[in-house]
Image (cartoon, rainbow, N blue to C red):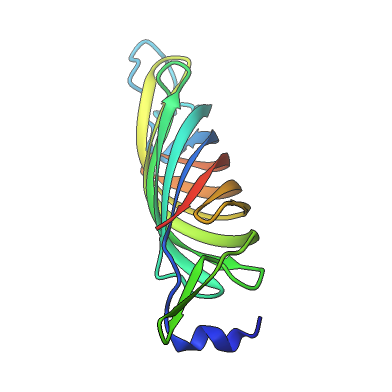
Length: 197
């Protein structure tokens, strides 16, 4: 269908998705933030050895796409851990944009002279970028620790439509996490359901 039909008005629907998946977050402590506190250790260097840890947790993701256009949308999202090992996990809230690679990124409703036309993409795929603030809890050999971090990442995925209002969503992403005391790489894999509003 010609893109001229979309010029008559903004009839694109917002989208909410509910997803479950795995987050794997590598954590490396910054050496400059570590201080040796064990007085029994005889060393000229007062800094402690930086620890590395890996956090893997089954997590829940809630995502709301709004201000949707034919080829792009904005979104807000949140991640919370559901199943963790030793209490480790990643909490994250963020914002971002999706760019759709097919003809249309959302359900579209067009009304003219009392006649309503609804166009629903059967399959759509996209890539996007996001930023946010997170909180990671991780375990080292000596203690459980935590840090606040700034997250910057990219992702890609696809949605297969089911009926008039729902779809199955698959998304993978990777990001750089820069914290107060740590740095790391976060990788996520999520599968879930979408709902047109």
